[in-house]
Length: 582
Image (cartoon, rainbow, N blue to C red):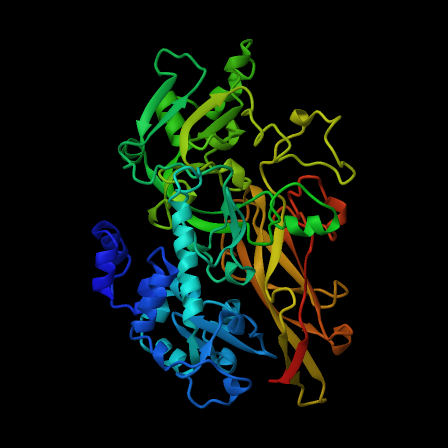
C-alpha cells in the first residue's frame, strides 16, 4: 500500500501525512488522512489487510443470527439506524462495526459514549486519549465487533474527507485556511465558523480543553499562525500628549512578555447569544441558534493591560478621573478599544482596564500552551466577567478614547438589549442603548439532555417500606462581573418543589472576583406522580449569584429581537424514566 501511495502522491504530501502519526496505525486509519479518489481507495482497501475479503453481505436476519462477525458487511445506513436502546447501539471505528449496547452500563465514561451512537467512535476516542494508553479498550471493543463496513461506504467516507480537504485548500475561498476543529462540535455555520460542543461534554472538565471550546467567528481566521511572537507587533495609543511619555508605542508580543510581569487567570467566556435557540422557539430572533454550549473556561496567561498602561503611559485611575473635568473632550478617556486583524473592533470602559482587580489580560497562552489559531494566536484580550465579543481575538491595536468603539459589534444592534415588544429597530436610536458588557446570572443543565432516557434510583426505607426516587442532574452556573454563585436550585417536577444542588468545581473562588463558572450536581428527588403521561420528567435549574440576582422563570418575559442574554430557568424534558431499586 505504501509503495502505491508514494508513487501516487508527492513526497511532501506523504511526509506531511506521516507526521500526523507517532505510532503504528492501522491501514484504515492511515487512509482516513489521505486524499482524493474514491475508486483508488476502494482498490487499496479491498487488497489490504483489513479482512474485507472475509466480509459478505448479510441477508434478512443473518445480521442477528450469524455467529461470525468477520464475515458480515454493513452499510453506514445500517449503523445509523441503530442509535437507541430499543434498536441497539451500534458504532463504527476504522473499518469495524460494533454493537456496544450491553457494554454501555459498564463504560467508565458513563453515557457519554451514547454521543457516538449510530456513528463514528473515532472523534470521541481522539478527544479522550486515555483510550490509547492501554490495549484494554481495544480488546473490549474487538469483543463487541459484529462485522465491518462495506467497501463502498469506506470509499464514501474517504472521499468525503478528501472533498473537505480540497475545499479547504481552495484559494478563492476566504475561509479555506480556517483551522480544522474537532468533529465533535456541532456546526451552526461553516463560513464564518459558529460551532459548539454537545451539552453532555461541557462539564466533563472545569478547564475546557480547546477541542471542546465553542467557536464564534465573525470573519475568516487571520493567517497569523506561522508568525513568531517576536515578529507579531501590537500598537497602543492614547490621545494624551504628555512630555514624559509617548502617546503611541509599538511592541512585539515577545517585548510584552519580557518587559512586564507575566500573570495567569482562569476565566470563563460566554457568547452573548448562548441559549438563543430557546428564545427562537418563542419567536424568531436574529443570530446563531446556540444551545447551552456557547460558553467555556480556560487558564489564560499574559500581561495585565493595567500594568502596560501604567508603565508605558503613566496612567492611573486617579489621573483618568481628573481628566473627566477637561475642557478638551478628546482628553476625557472613558473607553479602551481593541482592534482585531479580522476587522472586528470592540471596547470596554477604561475603569475596567485600569482596575487593580479588573484582571484584563493581553493573553498569549491558553491552558499552558500557545494560543491556538482559532482562539486568537498570537495575542488576544481576555476581559474577565464581560461578554465574549469584548474578548477580542487576533489583537493588533489597543486605543484609548473618549468614545466607544465604532462599528456594528459595539454601537450597532448586535449586542444591544431590546424589550420583548420591540420587533424592529426602525424608529429606535440604537447607538443610545448601552452596549452589553457584564452578563446576568446564568445556569444550565448538561445532564441529562433533552429526551434522554433515564434510570431512576429507588431506595426503600427499611423502617416503613417507603420508596424514595431520584435522578442525577448536573450542570454549570456563571455570572458576569466576577459575581460568584451562592446557590443553584433544581426541580424535577416542573418547579413545584425545589432542592439545593451541591456546588463543586469553581465554588472556592472569591465571591466578588469569580471569573470562572461553577459546576453543580444533585441526585434530585421526585415522586412517581411527577412523571407525565409519557413517564417523563420536567427538570429545571436556576442560580443565584453573590449580589442575589436570580434567573427569571420564563423566556417569554426576556425575549428580545437579538436573542441575547437568555438566562431564564433552564428546562429539560427527559426521555422515559425507568425505576430500579438500589
